[in-house]
Image 1 (tube, rainbow, N blue to C red):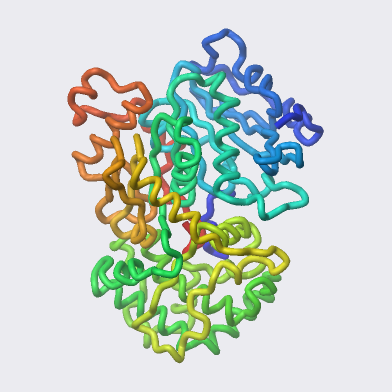
Image 2 (tube, rainbow, N blue to C red):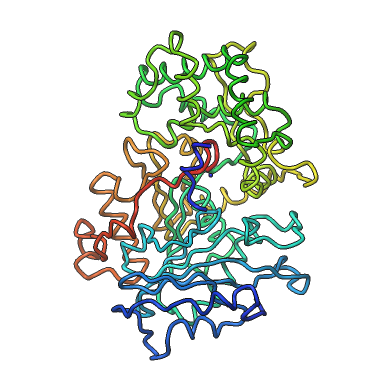
Length: 483
């Protein structure tokens, strides 16, 4: 995904390109346990023997080898001869005798060693992929028509085929939010690659212009007291549009922010304010309601500004804030869909634009056309064909209002909801019996479930000990109204 930028996760036929040759000489990590390959050949040598793979950097982490790599991908998997680009991936290597988790957040990839929840559960390796067209994994020049869910799934398929020769045990794909969507699309197009899928808080906008599920969510989420506080602050920010936009104008000038893409400071201001309630429930808990001004009408301008800025972030709808997310908005406006909600607590005269479409957040020189069949196809496939798929949602997460559901054709697949949790919901936050069942199924799909766990799922536990640095459980924060 300004102050809210602190929420963001930081953000192949060619070998040894000039751009990575220098980095390949980075210092090697200290010797650690469990890092040798079962063939006796150094794991880095095996990785770099893959055509199109090159080293950017190796970073030390006790018990693992961690590599940042570039992999040469076709811009168009249907026509591989028509150009390539360098896609950034990372490999957290433990042992080729262990299962592997394939992770993507659907945005940029982090180059800091980290372990996703399924990786800890199975005590495995982890391959993480940067989503195509998020820099630096962007073709030059960028043909935006090649940014779609099939092309991205084909990126994953090609990476999997290249690495499966080294990591030949079971594979589990995973991702949170847009990453959960990505894991689902990958399974839809390449259902034979993975042995299981763990998708966290994955939205499923089947029909783009029917969003009443979100309105019902906001009418009941949390408590009435909390909803009333949030609604009052949001309304008051629109009542005070004129004085607060003067503050915004000075803030933009001080920081060099511009508004060419969205069109005007006024449009950006309203977009930030309308994200406020959504952003709170996406990233905060009910207990955080105490931080919201209790008497919005009598609050100072500074209190209203600070509350909106802390949750939504006034820097986001500037050109500088939007630019890193052009690939997301392009996909939202061409295939993924985007929510539109009503604001019954705000008079119509106070709202000039409403929830603006993704087209407003993509530079005009990039053409877009929505494909309504894309999400309907995926939804139908999941309902009728889901196999070894697990979905985890948070009870108080707006994105879970439109979620994936299972039909009669699903097999060994589950949809669970973590009570009271937000966009950071995970297996650990499920009620006890669902937590045990989910953990047991992940271990089974990864081929590492003991006989005891197979006989009694309640005995299931993560195989790797929790590491406070490696297993950070912070919410994957993107700007508020972005999955």
